[in-house]
Length: 140
Image (cartoon, rainbow, N blue to C red; front, side, top):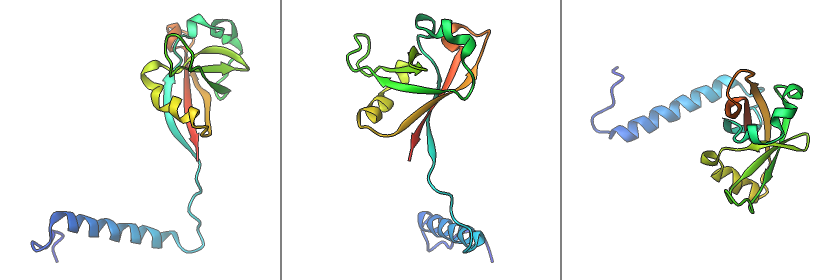
């Protein structure tokens, strides 16, 4: 028997049938005793901190560690960007989510949806605007 679709079927219908069969096969392999993984954090954004050189980051740099949690603080009255989202480390502003990436995050925070941030990389010899990388996740 050929793996090619029957010419009487449209390609879309054939692909839908193959996908359904594959999903069913994978579901059967898991077995009835294995539970599907529960919801967890979803990665929204990974970026360097904008404005790190203009805030407390330079002073606090030696104390920061990979994995440290950060607080996200919306600043709708920010004169430079009404969608600004500040990053705070232990209550001190160290910079912002870059403007090019903050629209969806600002809307999410304004809606009160659970969102976390943490430090994922520290680059000692990088320019200040690339020195700290953060990961922002949605809690689902």
